[in-house]
Image (tube, rainbow, N blue to C red):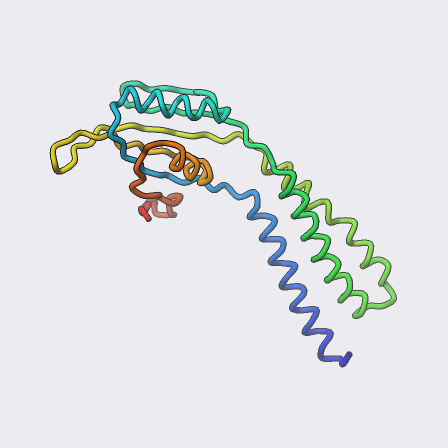
Length: 191
């Protein structure tokens, strides 16, 4: 290998390692979103349906406010074995690539660089410790008049985006839009 190849390969491998670190961090990022659903059911019927749905998904009711039609659920999200193993594997491959470049660049420390591969389980442990956490689901039901004079229920759910997707598939709710987490200025937009 020529001399200019080693620094450029090292630089690219270092960029990939940085990307891998951000990917591992993103695996545990909070992905709470707000979704708005509309339903033809009555307020009480809808409230009972959604409450039963979240209780079946191992969420417990934390607070209820009947005057504002709000309810908050709490549940424990478990980490995925597959994701922990996958992140450990990705870390091992990334560290192996970096170790190879470092052992070519600094050959007298080659055994030290190869030993860095033993650090790859740290990625899986990081994910395992951070991904298992309590999550809250907040629900608010409001009556809405639509232009033809009918009254429907507008359900605003704040939860993890996967929960919102499953809720959309499971119920007979019509999704209006999904609001991504609020921006710095407090504004939210419906997508």
